[in-house]
Image (cartoon, one colour):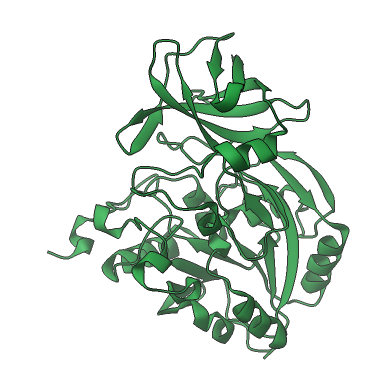
Length: 364
């Protein structure tokens, strides 16, 4: 029986993901270099799907194309803690709020994995390493029917947060990654400022050499910043608010590309979420910064992008709505059926998908 026999796409986008197609370790642990993961390239205007290796990316981009990248770096955003009833816990730091407090998720430890821990109350204080502590103030609720799981919390630490996390924290990981890996495995090569709870993983496969090849071929790169929050949304809740910053020069580059009819391609759903937050109906964008609560759906649509480089997303994940907004449900169904048939690997250490709305040859 083929994998496709087990696939059942329906509303919302859903399918069976076999456990063996979850990437359990970085590609380096599988004997590969970063840019040797697989790459699926698809064109929604023709439904053509190609299979290659990520280091062949320059063959599918043309002079004049623009990649919008998220330069946020990953924090050691998990800390060990303990509940007053002696339950061992992990605290996951999600978003730094303007008043200095944090949105955090508290999870209980079960073997090599964790799960949301519901037995918490406002005002509870959890001890952290080396005399630090965290006080839970109130649940962060949103205009959604999904259960709240992030807390607004105040910190009391013996040293500044980032050095403290660097010394006592560790990268957030979930059950499909069985072993601990150093923070360096969770960073892109173009990180400029740390602040993400979890890696903006679509950019992980880039190497300095590959970026040099792209630039030498005339591909432009426009940076922005979005500090990602936790992705542990087991019930497929919409994402939480995240901090973003769009530089003035990135605004100019993107708007100029639109005027000239050149393709703008987002590297990761985080880059798309940030830029779409400041995108007008005609696709032009503004500079700025703040916290975005934008959830991109097919009804809302995508305004500023002609393509997206992304990982492979879990069944029913909210990111799939963004992909559908870009290229439609039918093309997305074809791509995910193909990825399953070809045994691509999912999650942050897995393979990648370059989705292009149109194949442009005029700028070669």
